[in-house]
Image (tube, rainbow, N blue to C red; front, side, top):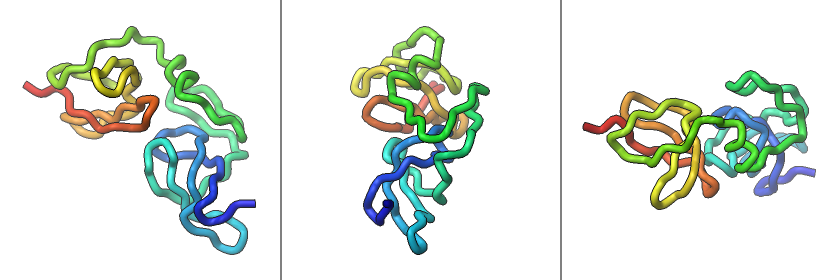
Length: 129
């Protein structure tokens, strides 16, 4: 049974995956607001038992939580060493000196990318001249 401060599996609107979330608010016995434990995005609770479409086109079925290694394995590009002068696109795999290996989960604007690492999601600059 879910409770405020407890964990539930939910679909993350930013990560586009079923992941563990912390319950922020409830109405009765139903969670209504949650925070993703991976990217820290707060959003409405989305039931984990529905079929979801990921950007790769593969379906994820309810109750399935992917580990970082499983998510990284879906990205088949060769890792590149991160540099702020490099240009990166969604799906690129990179090696960062401090955070280790990760993959670009989103391009936020022309100068920033969101990268998912084992320790969490970081916003990094790219394309700097």
